Image 1 (spheres, rainbow over the protein chains, first blue to last red):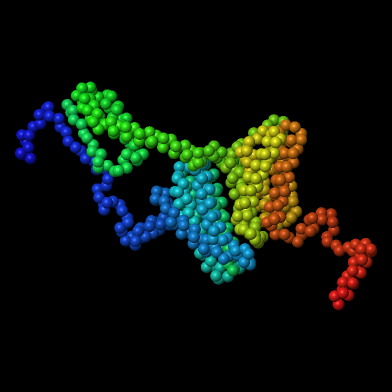
Image 2 (cartoon, rainbow over the protein chains, first blue to last red):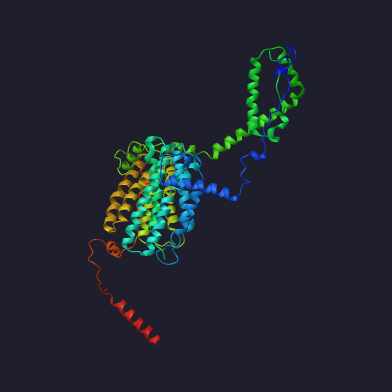
Length: 217
Length: 315
């Protein structure tokens, strides 16, 4: 700027002016507003997030994606599908309807809340909803086991099918417990891991028991 | 020397700037910092200019700032008080402060009656072990109910199991605490909950074994030995904390009765009733079921006559 080379500011003229600091966002369109995108985009984004978490559960690795962006869509879908599949299984007449839908729902959510509270009381560093998210997603192997059991029961309800179901449910129960332990036990002090693992073991045991004793009409 | 002042035009800020607590908190912070800077700054022309600035627009702004500031403080205090009252699980935190080794030790101790009843025995006020034991009992009960094809009419299996176990733990604890209060025993509610909870360990073992091995004699042995041991331990601890024979008798009799009867109830109410129950009720010395005609001729004659009359009437 050659023209400004000889501009000089004398010492006794105070320099003043206005600095306007706009605090609001630049413009509403540049925000992360997801209201204007097509519905397909929103659904696909959420579905992809849920799908990624399913993959994390099936191959439990030391990643924090499950914990960082927790969401409860996956647990809801799993819980509802498990409860629906457990409908209509009863020993005999219509008085005893097997585990009703509301019962399964309440067991899963109430159990998850109790385990979360327990792990927080034992000094865990994980937050409430993160723990709920992990426990809900780790019901996935058991839902798969329920599917397999229903298919096996279509073929027959004898001793062989019981043994197959027992093996499948047992394996999936172990997988669920290991997967959730891999995520949750790290947030505990090291000498108290057993205290946190035991309620998780009981929780998945009760769900596995409900799946194993399911006999369709 | 920079004697200028930068004026921040507040017109472009949000409307809520005056009433938003976060903004007030920030402004409060900024004001404090500004005051500190001014206090450390040089006197002279700078201060005069600042004084003028404050004098013109500052009075209204300062009053507003102070009022908002006060509201921020009050709001923060109220919110933290409400939070600490309702949403604080830290109240329960000291009762969950255990190590796995301690839990295991206490589980084993719950089956060993203490000998020294003249000196008050220590009870650990811990809630993790009892809570886990109640949940385990629920799981075992469910297993027992399902394998015996129990049909619950007005309710669900799960609800019944949870209701029974938690109802026993909480209800009997409260009742025993009330009795202990009447009998002047030195025990707190948490200690009572803990004591009774650990006493359920015996129940868990017994039911786990006898729901899988359906032998009634085995159940009675377990009931007496295992149930008896855990009851003895609870009774001994309570006796050590009570003074006076009548009080001791009341407390311990009630607890022993309730504890043993609960185990009996759990076994029989939710378990397949086998035909052999008649044998076991008659006692081990009775010969196997025999039909022996009762020798009461008067009664049998009367019965015969009435039956004949009834048949004659119907014909």
